[in-house]
Image (cartoon, rainbow, N blue to C red; front, top):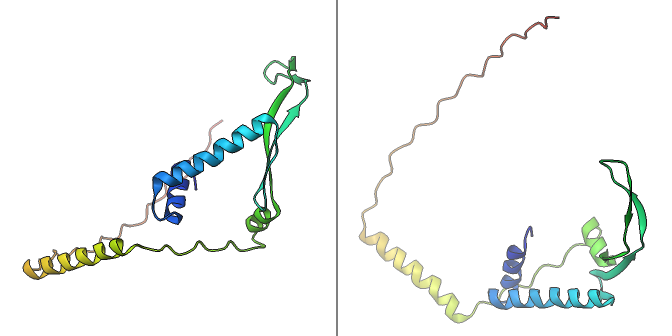
Length: 153
């Protein structure tokens, strides 16, 4: 999943297509992790990984543009360590379990059947039009290479 919106769509597919509930669930999980890690707590999701806060001490660093020494203040940064199951799935040692099949409600099953019936009825009424035959594209001759120039000194 390249972005959050696509991740929400994937969650919605697993939550009976309810995109609003999927977005709310994802936001709740992310907000809870943010709040816990900001307090200094460690969030452990068994098999997935550990989110934690790490302290970086004050130090001297070097400005790469000027080469001058710069003092860097003490700071806190978030850190993530992947769990054993996450590592195994990523390395290919373990296969990811398939998502459970979606259960469609009876109302959703009936709608496609009505659409198909309407299409069949429309197809019987309208005469079939033949599309004009397309010509195969002409093959292009390979490009000729220009002779190499001699370098003059």
